[in-house]
Length: 177
Image (cartoon, rainbow, N blue to C red; front, side, top):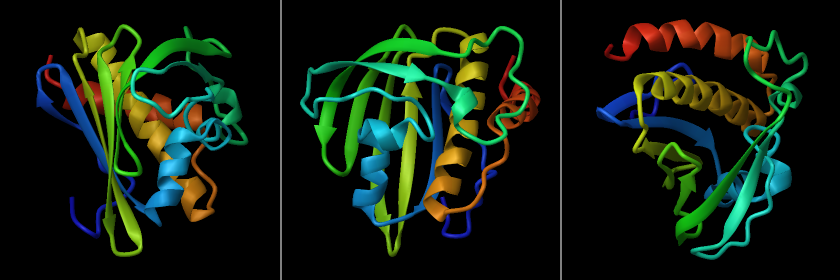
């Protein structure tokens, strides 16, 4: 990823069951790390859930996507007001790497690398079981990262659900059938 990358960069497949998506975010690294690991900050762009910062510790993610942006946009059919998922920390190297089990859809690794005043966040979601789940995960990460980038830059994000609706068609065209 280059220094002039935009928030509109799409995730890419690095294998048939692995998505990688990157964002260059306003730093410093400790600030971005806090947005990954502290429930009150993480709930503003992804999901709440208190984490005990230790390898092997379990926790629950709680998504309330209607609360991510104001307005939230039009929630697609089939999505509820809240979603919960059990997870477990599998790797921890603060503030550079956090790996977690991601419910029944594999695992996710967050890697942070300083780039001057900015931080390169790389998310790798692996062991995705099928194309339908891969489409949902790709769209979701992209939309959630747009919210994170906007929060860190102190600007307003596109309504979350509008981004999901727009991105789903884009990823459907981009991902192999």
